Image (tube, rainbow, N blue to C red; front, side, top):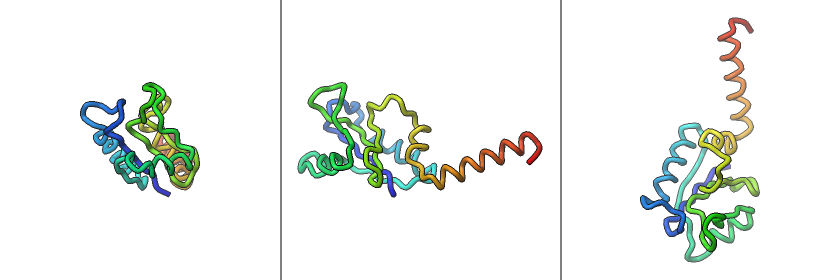
Length: 124
């Protein structure tokens, strides 16, 4: 399982500095948290990516700007419909880490937090 980050500099929603900069921030954040991720530009010329994302039930259309695509798409190719875009306001960086983290890693992190809490309280 890997997280894929696609950026689209041609989108009407892309910042003036380009969408790649934001994609790099997300990539760095995932890697710092031990999540396998890759990043590349969205291929809009051949529609190959658009078809693939459609099959994975990833909606890349902008809901803010009609007839435009989102400039940042983060998705998991192992789970249909598991994605966020630059327009996903309900997610923060830390939320995204949890969303795309494997169950084993979530369990391990929860156990570490549990042990830290017990250590702070002084008993096990």
